[in-house]
Length: 108
Image (cartoon, rainbow, N blue to C red; front, side, top):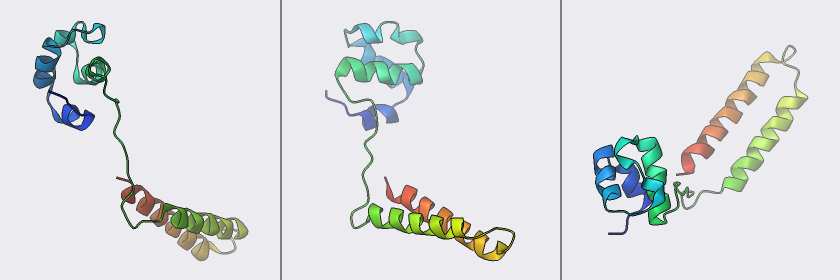
């Protein structure tokens, strides 16, 4: 059976060892004593699967515009002196933080 990285990463160690038992490859040699952190990449190598998750952006989300907004906010932040305008400075830092969080959430 052909597996994907996502399917393998959701399995527990016992299930991964069952799969490794049937695979003849140097990477899975000693599978019975491997932990999941070592066994998962070894199985991916043996089965010819890319050993990482693929991230995709949510449809309808424009990453470039959010990054442009962050850059504009950073310019505003750099123009302010924190001791002279503490309230405005904190507001800009909060907005930058919110935009970065939004960016991370939208990349799935």
